Length: 193
Ligand code: AMP
Image (cartoon, rainbow, N blue to C red; front, side, top):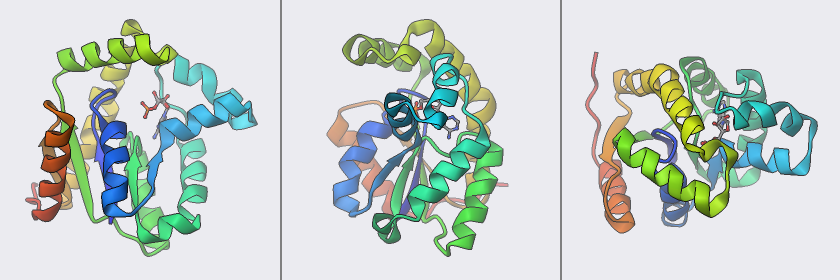
């Protein structure tokens, strides 16, 4: 299974991907986690990304594509993957299409988790207190939501036009949301123009 999880920051992509990976038998690839690991390790890429991430902005497409290409070349991704946090704009969606074409691994499905902004802001506040992620402070979350609306929301339409998108309600108990995603993965999505 080759799956992309779309959704605003705090919509539950990471939580749901961690639950789905065992059931689907594929790795959870989070570009945010990979970048945070690079920042923590103090690599050259991490040093470049740190300030951009703390400001709630997007790290450059080139860095992301290189990082993703390397990750997808690893053995465990041969069986498929759950991609969380990529693509975040139309250029990345195009680049992903081309990369997957090149490695002969087209996407099977794209799930978008739908959560109202008010709930997102509340969830990120809780995560900010629990984990202390600088980009979860309320002002930065608002910025990240604006970037999501402007740059990432069109990615859902990109996949809807290709007949890959399923929209899932991301509000409720975790088990309920996981069940909704698994159910959606069994359905055939509609193609929109
Ligand atoms: P996330 O954990 O997915 O919310 O990502 C945390 C931060 O990492 C984002 O706010 C961006 O600064 C950066 N990031 C993660 N994925 C991407 C991406 N696909 N493109 C650009 N920046 C990204």
